Length: 334
Image (cartoon, rainbow, N blue to C red; front, top):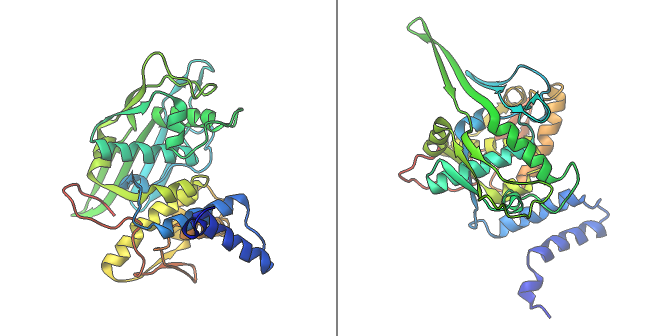
């Protein structure tokens, strides 16, 4: 029989919460909501057991598409004076068609893995393992599901899209003594890659060696010079929502900013939509989706203190960054 300490572990705490909701007549959460509750409880009970994950600062400022842009010549997103431009450069020899744009949660999870491994190893060439199943598990996904919508098939497709996309960051600034400054940086994710994985048999070990990618030089430089840290435990819990992943990165960055200044900040919904929500129908639709995503984030990021306000939200200066700041020789942008 388990001891009292074991009985009151994470699963038991979550179950007590659910039992209490059932007794009081409150509607029970969906399976997805229950997993979020359990993740929040686990993070709350072990706040120091952080699993570090990193993302390039530029990809926090301007994010990938949430939905498939379809057959368009270019895809752009602008935040302030910075514009992310993505062009399709890949070609599928089997279909004789261009490879589409990366979108949704999966390329975001891929970017977290690539960024984190680059910071951890300090190398441009990253080893991705002998089996596809092992790599899928590293992203918090399930390699056992089959069919055309399996995690293995969808991940393989999004890897193709992300690794073959031409990614460019542009900025324009005026008022430089009457001149206009233009800057442009090509930040393609990879320069070379070799993948031996079969999504139909993800557990199969390749007889030709392990899969690997070599990061683009400027992309690697951006990651290792100014990575924005987060907690991988929270990212796994939010993995099904690209908007929640984007807003989590924004939240931990903003939380440290307001805490350092000691001053709360009002953020208009219109500004957030311009930064993250160009995939949504209108401001009302974006606000609804963003509020739902922020509620998920608050469940796994208890240090975040938000308040609804007229026309936007307030990030309170009492917020704590998801990852405590520790000065080091490597510059960390938080």
